[in-house]
Length: 227
Image 1 (cartoon, one colour):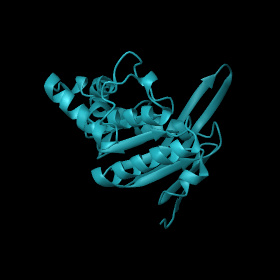
Image 2 (image 1 turned 60 degrees about the vertical axis):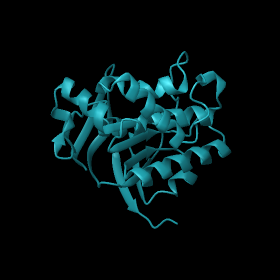
Image 3 (image 1 turned 135 degrees about the vertical axis):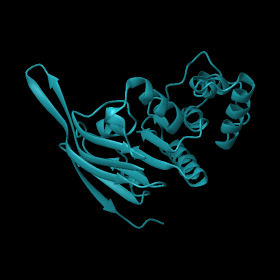
């Protein structure tokens, strides 16, 4: 699935150079579930952006199924993101004037899916995350946990190979956090996804079989047995 080799990312801030990633080597197999942790500013979200093709490394390779995302033309990279990678973010990123079903449908528009099929697939995706009764509700009419489940349905409706989540429970209380994590873990198992998540929450990190810790742009991966 993923094979990262000597990946670096440097930013210039005024006269200062920020070394976000310093020669990252990482392999993520098909169907893997990896949690990324580390201090603020340590490179966690930067690494996730590389995996999602949302940013390009300063040097090194980011291979997804043998294709180097760092070397793709922008139009082809956009297509890979649209077809193969689902994203879930801390802030939900729902369009406030659209219903739950319409928000989920937006993920299918770039793929050229017909309107009737979009509606059917969006409704099924929402039912799969327990929101079958909320199709016509606006984001403001739902709880934070429900909004994040809409975001998960939107990420999965296009049937991606990869699900990337950046602090998906960061805006939720403990009960909603557990509810959303159960949905994410169920979707990972049922769809055979490769699931990579950034989190500050150690309780969530303990649930994953692989933990990547990033500090000052360097990575350490630990394999663990989980129940």
